[in-house]
Amino acid sequence: MTRAGHTRIAPAALRHTIETIAARAFGVPGANVAAVLEDDAGRLGATVSVHLALPPLLGRGRGPGPLRGVDGGTVFDLSRAARATIISRGLDLTGRTLGRVDIRLRGAKQPAGPARVDAPAGRPHPNPMERNAT
Image (cartoon, rainbow, N blue to C red; front, side, top):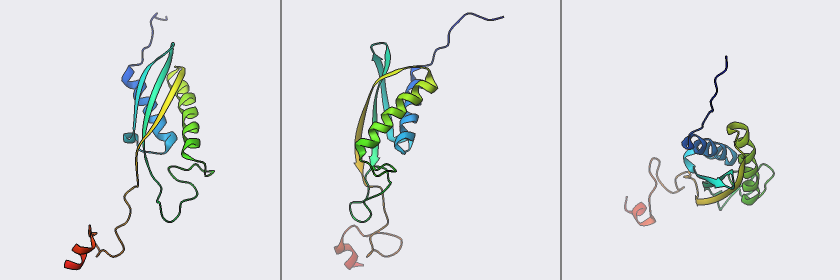
């Protein structure tokens, strides 16, 4: 016996699904992604904001990393690939066709690295004057 009815996916579940897909596509933690969903002429429209970490400005700047794809592409190449992933995986997981997907890269900063070379073990000094005082 079958029952008539329909299945609804809560808006929060759709948003969380799109955020998770985007986080995986960009290779960042889920906390670094926020999404806003809206109607796009009958399809699902999404605005995805992603907080990326910058690669070091000195030292190794080439090769794979958060802002470079495996092939060494630019952040724009990574964004285009992520948009395609969000659209295809979004359809696979939710059954909803995504129309417009806007990606906003925001708040890029360098990830926390090792302490300064001239700092004693355990704590870095914020400036050279303090270092000389100890």
